Image (cartoon, rainbow, N blue to C red; front, side, top):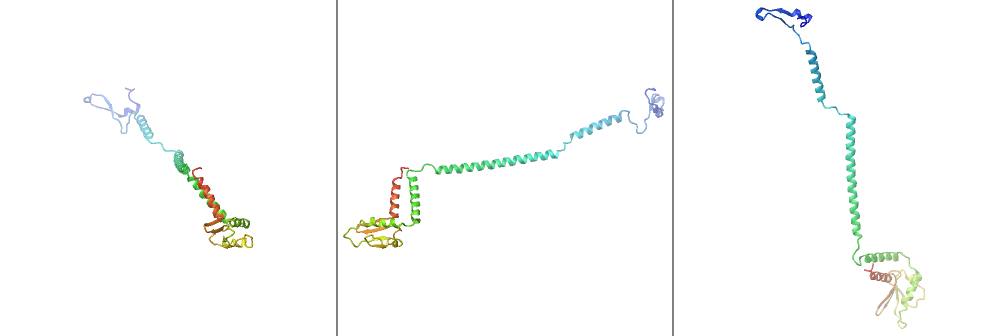
Length: 218
């Protein structure tokens, strides 16, 4: 019995009657706790505390979160720029395809007609800007005057009013009169059957006829 009770436990022992089986029991003092109770409770409390701590979600690292957000933003910006670049390339390809369709072989005579109109327009601009050459104008006067018959003394050459001073006093052999209806540099002779003319308009007409003959051959 001395092995069962601790030294200070004897003070709590009380005697009971035979009716109570004649033994000795202990009456625990207020606040008595089992020997291993504190350790077990502490261990159990620690386990519960550890479990609750482990159940909590780990706090996110601000630096890692910022890095992830920056990566996501960079990826989205890159995707957007790629889509915009792809769309721009598609538009450029479409414009190039449209331009190539316009350069496709045209119907017969279309190209030569375009070239003819361009040449005539260019030559006409050049003729209108070039200064009238006196010697060339006299040569044209002599060429047209050669068609006048010797018996006809009433015919006269027609030139532009501004060209008349250039050939005044020259030996042409026939009268020369001013005609505002002519282009500068032109010479015309009226006859009973029509007229004879030489000058820029006539030469442009000949050039146009030559270009028209080339239609369908280019």
